Amino acid sequence: MSGGWAQPDRLFTDQMNTLLDVAKTQGFLKFQELCAQWCFDPNYYNERADQFLGTHGPWSHLNNNIDGMQRLVEATITHDAAQHLGSITAPTFVIHADGDLLTGTRLTTPLAKAIPQAASVLIANLPHVVAGREHKKLFSDAIGDFLNRVESN
Image (cartoon, rainbow, N blue to C red; front, side, top):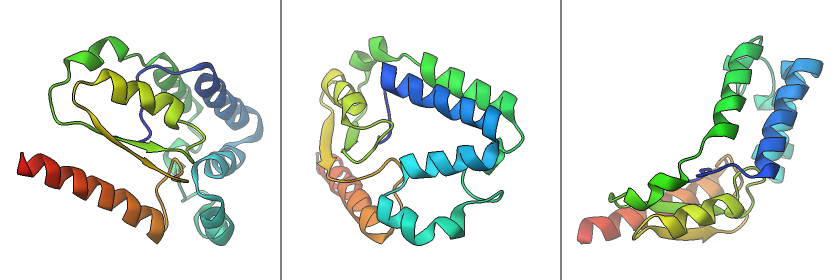
């Protein structure tokens, strides 16, 4: 998993509430812009923002849908699966993305520690949204390596 968490921390909770407040007070396009700034690699954002920002870009399903956004934020900040992690028996792979400003290593490390036999890898500078050729290759290579190890066991 990547971009996961067992329990939200204060920072993540505040970030989600900030996104909701921005959507309510400044509208969808400002919400989308802030999300993209937090979620994409800075170089990717700088090179492609004009191509993906707008009413048909990321998170467009939340455009004019404050109720849906409120439910999404409520679900993310009340999610708590920590007590269940120890019972996971399936092969599990946790990707730590140290460039992830939302659910970075501070939230993925507890997952890797609590899930029995979990494998994990740190991908330097990987943002929350895996976009761009270089990041996609690092991400898919890590998953491929994990799947090869699981298949060989």
